[in-house]
Every structure is written in C-alpha cells, then in structure tokens.
Length: 196
Image (cartoon, rainbow, N blue to C red; front, side, top):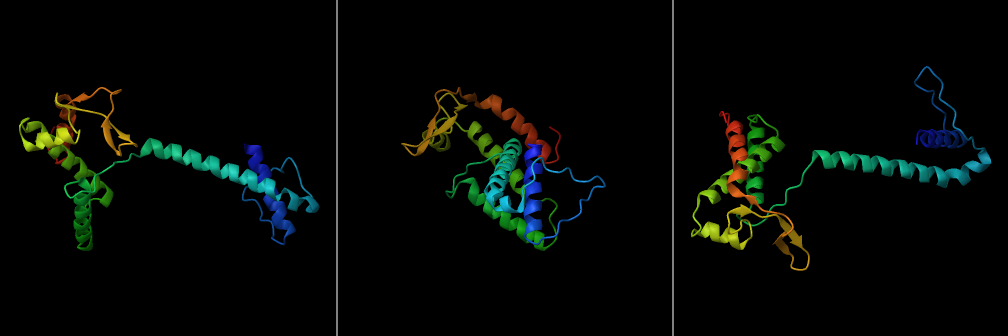
C-alpha cells in the first residue's frame, strides 16, 4: 500500500511538472524517496487512468476506515414523528435551547442537552408504564403497539418489509421489564445531580 501511494504521488508530481507546475521542495530534510517506476513525458497521458484508479482505491479505503470508526462511536435512534412521539419534544427543546443561547444562558451544548432530554423522557415514560396496571389504557395501547408483551417484558422488534411495520422478533428472547430499568433509575438520579 505504501509503495502504491508513493507511486501515485510520484506520478502526480511528474504529471504536474510536465504541465508547467513547479515541483515543491519536500518539507523534510531527507529527500523524497523516488517512486519505483518513473514515467516519461510520452507515457504520462497513458498512465493518467492508472493514477486515477489508484487514487480512487486509496480514497475508498480511507472512506471505509472512517465508516468503521463511525460504527464504533455512533448510534442511531429511530423515533416516531407523531404528536406524542419524541421528535416533537426534541424540536421544542431545541428551540428553547436556541432562545437561551441568544440570552447567553446555556451551560451545555445542544447535543448534550438533547441527549439528556431524550434519556430523561424515556426513563419517565418507562417508569410510568411500569407503574400502571394491566387494565389501564396506557398498558393496553402499549400491548397493541407491541412495545411490551403480556408477561411485562420488552420484546425485540424487527422491521417487516412486507407488512411495513415493526414485528416481534421471535428469535430474540424478551427482556424482563423490572430488571432492565434499575440501571436507568440510577443513571437519571446522577444526571440530576443526586446520588444514585
């Protein structure tokens, strides 16, 4: 790979020099290592597609490596755009943050503020669902929308392209509601400055 890069850079330098572009001096005190293959003025035009191909390979490898880094450091939230969904609340919270920013009263970045708001809202909604009875309308609507199962556990949902809806993934075992929410309660108390 390193020799390919040197070849490409050497070819680009040769091509630039042939077209009237002066070659810059290397920044290092050591001279640049000459490419393994020098091309004459006659063959520079013929080798331009090869240079471009090597540069494309280099750019694609770089893009792939950046994508791998993004996969390790990012996550995606899928939210409902309905009136009761999180998206409308995020938009409202964002506009409130902008007003505070204009007054120079913000203490957190917008990203931090929104993530904190989403997590706190999720914990509030989950706690409310855990505390309601199975006869309550909230529990019944959660059952119908497949957010919870009859045994008070969280199912894994998978998008079904044919039905165009989220369906319970039978391959994955559901998570008991009570055991999954204990760490959330500790986290939210520490977010609010309280001891867990």
